Image (tube, rainbow, N blue to C red; front, side, top):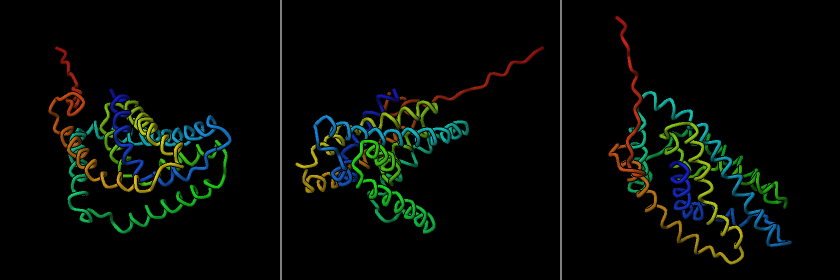
Length: 233
């Protein structure tokens, strides 16, 4: 279930990826000596992103295990959905503390510099590194995927969801990287215009999931473990 769900989520969300990370994909130093090497380079780059997402799935899956024990998973899902919708309906209202912004800006600048340096090296292994670093860049869609991973039933499910989320973005991101020479910036701009609508839809789905309605895939029942107490006479 988590494999299919993660892949579908990534595939549909890849429109967001193209809109936000499209310029980076267009600038990748893919080999041009042959079509095979060019395709391999695009696969290396996207595999690096999938690896990072899997690592994030492991980290937040551990966090989610703690949330599950405390019984607040569904409330986390609802809160994430509400925040996602508010971020679109009331932009600028939800702001991070200045100290958090400084930290995130510092991390972003460091990653951006390392990616920029890597773009000048034309090696397949370097494309893998760019993909790994790209996976750590601030991204609303990744945050949404992480929020879903946190509410997974097990740590393994969390990792699988994030890995296949990354693989789900591969077809469109591969096409953008491979056909970079015929992609126009106006196309990316139009995709960015559709991102708010996509975020609102995901927010609604997160709220429905947290409502525990028993609807398969959309709002499945959270599994609650009960402890059986046996009395001896």
